[in-house]
Length: 293
Image (cartoon, rainbow, N blue to C red; front, side, top):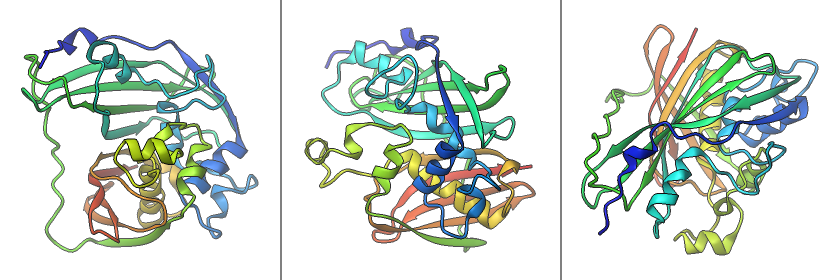
């Protein structure tokens, strides 16, 4: 198999982008990540607070984004120009660090996606591209920073450095909090309206070509679900206290599935978590960490 040197991608950037949003977008996002009737502050503009993972929307966003693009094109997709893969890529994990609360009524997100590292998993084992997005408001203030990694099956063995291992070890004891919820049969369609127009989440034929029986739920939708559920358990009513969240995306999730977030408090302001498909018992998000102020 041909070897592709992905080290040349480090430092590559996409063009700057921006999107204007208002309270309706914040409320739609909340409903897209499962907000309930009693979660008034997540959807009623009179009391509105943004679920912090709204700051992750720019990573896959296309709706109302300028310059316009019809499909999401994060910087990791620059690897396509070198690899031209015949096997689909896979998002491996996501991390978001919050620097200030998100204005829930209106604002502008500005960002530029860049590749900050690549990792070599070995010959025949693929490669991983790590990207970073600093999201700023219209005044240039840093709102949050997103990191994401994308796995390419066909690019390993180029002599790059190995991928670092997560330092999160889920305790063997019972979780301190267990929160049950349900991902509706149209959750993927609701989340799509926040900007992720990837075809695998809406097109049945495309999903089948990707070896799924039906369109699957977005990984960042699960990420938002888990964030909302952990705020409810750990810092109820105070989403502005969230400081950092990260998790591995371990398995796909189908619409119409009962889910559970298992939470272990580790120390003051820090918890580990797992987001589980209750039908299969598999972790959809694993080795998760949530930190708050």
